[in-house]
Image (cartoon, rainbow, N blue to C red; front, side, top):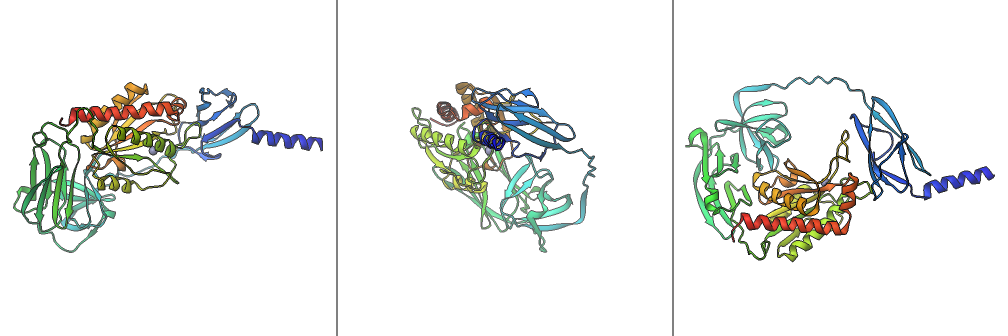
Length: 455
Ligand SMILES: [Zn+2]
């Protein structure tokens, strides 16, 4: 009886008293195919993993890297009053023999209709990366001359593009090149707008160069059936930076809109600037989990709300894609910002790392963009964050994330810092640090608009 009570006490003691908490790996008995992984979590007592001391941050957070060998790896995590065993399996690597896919050229061109809204037209037959030439609406007619793997090759004048087979459907009709009967120019306070009158929807491409170039393909009476229009962007914008454009069909009319520069009040550079703030993840989509158990969705929302207050204080018109713990689709976030005609779209996230890396050695802020028009904004904001917060400069990078693949606004994604780096995690949840962080973002925005738009 005495023994049983002692055992009961031990069990209760062990489960009631907080000792350590592992947030990654998310569960015991996982398969990880990497040469190393890490235990992420927090502890209020000294901790050993397989007899090795775990370095604890002053917040209690830790990231402890462990090497993996092929087969089963057993890890004993031990503090004064708690012991947990993890088994991680590293699979034997089998040689995979992938035959390179061959291009098959058709003897006769085929004709296809786009059946997916916003189907990506790509420069290479690869379903990833910085290779999008345009996003095509439904019912745009394409001429196809061959295929490779999951893609058809699309004839674009003298050049080619690629479209996923699942985004198109063959149509029996031959495409007679479309007819362009002319265009109208509409001037408004905010946009230069060109309306091209076509008798059919044709594939298009907009190139962010100076001049900006619009190409409408499969248009007759033009060299290579390609109608080209140059827009002298730096001259038209009076030296200001490009800050949003769009190209889309309304019926068979193709509408090309280029945003005019923002008029800047030099005392309040963000006055009346429309800014969409997007707190990443939400609801069932948690995002990354920090050493201290913080969820990315919550940290992102806290920082997004502070940024909202700060930008409103500086006169900006702010739109929030979410204001509470709700799941919102990526496309809905972008559509909402475009509906409000936002000039800037800022998505707030915090970062994690894959197996095989050391979360103690990688930290800081990175900012992602997809279209070149957003790069100067990303650089200016990152510079401001790094200078004012002391966070590590984790670089401005171009990446194909859905929320930054939007040309209507200057679209960027801020990875505030690494939730799985113990030092970054402690900072990210510190209210004082969060305030300095959002001020540095707001300062970066002010400095961008002061130097890239007209006074
Ligand atoms: Zn995220």
